[in-house]
Length: 586
Picture 1 (cartoon, helix red, strand yellow):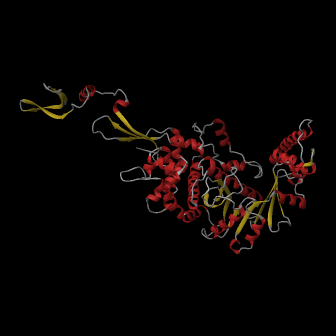
Picture 2 (cartoon, one colour):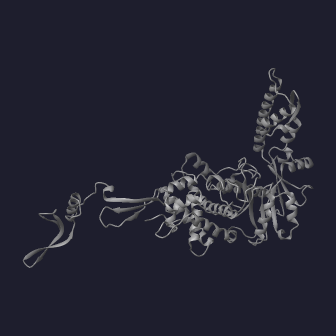
């Protein structure tokens, strides 16, 4: 084959692809095609190709057009994990637009937390492949909007009890140990009836808030979440949790762990009289006032009690039928003593400044009420005025430390008491009670992830109560997926991938938790044992987002486009291997 030039007097010459065919004694030309549309440079390259020569393009851009480049790797990891956890079946057995939108809400909260409007733009404008992977990408006649996301939230909220029941079957059971805690997030607006002024955990002055209680298994894996008005007290939410555990979940025997503000003595007495909770055990701790009363009754602060170990189990007439484990942490004792001395010194310095203002010759500060208000305003923030004796007069005041009060408080430094009811020694020894109570820190870690670090549940803008509940539920489901991802990706993250080894290395559960040797090495070297860089979870997702889906088209008339995926780095290959998710392909 060759390129033949056919001249034309009135027009440019025609370039034809021909081959020679012999018929008897004659040689005839057979025309195979017209390539006149090619440029002179392309014709020259084509001639060389027909001769069998290799033709290298001047550059990649000269041969192809890149139609789009869309981040894809983080989407593949997220949706792959969602599929592994059977979240689609958890939401609903039949594929439908509402289920796909709900999956987008859950996955989008992990990938790029933001408003529903922002997520809709993310899907429609193809900021990632999330929309196309879920079948939510723009199409002729399809007008997907944030209204569809809101409808999906209502659809999802209707299924919340069934979904939580399925999660409980997966991760809880008879003799289960459950953790429960309550937190809050501030609300923007005035329309939601759930938003009330209450105990402000976000330190947002003047903001109403919404409370929500999270129930997890002993590992901190979320199972259930409930939304309450912002002024609901912690103990008032426990009844709902118990009703669900015994009713919807069908669990008759379990150990319930909550903090001292949650499981009050009054609540425990009420629960003990309810036959539905006869098989329930309880683990919590005493408040400082209760510890002080216990110390006065039994003098349990004596150092000789802790000569051989830093915890001791005792009985007390103040708490009949309960097991009390008194813990003494020397490191915590030193920290509290140091902090108290610093705060006392700071308070004293402010009091001296106010006192000097009342004694100056020119324009002295005076007035009994004015002096008292200024003392409270400038010194109350340190919470140490209780340790000072103040004598305020119209023209001045005097102060001195109340050494007896300071010493009485110091006696309790480093002491805390774990209390349990209906948990036998055979089920859990004293050290086990302390360890399981300290597992509440895992729920607090969940709240940090949901509120600030990753999923950013706050601030809350939704007008309706149901939309607020759905928003919180979506964040819980997103954290359920993220929890699994973080634990599987632990070798590549600044997480301790050997928590059991770290736990075994602790002398006692009372002492401060430590990290395993491998975790300390990662923290110092910033590399894994394989020499790969170590990331935060968010940083690793950003790295995986570098795996893009590239759509290319050759610069040839009529040529079809095709999709390419970059070659994965060793880190990216390792991440998909740990997640046990298929590596992105073309």
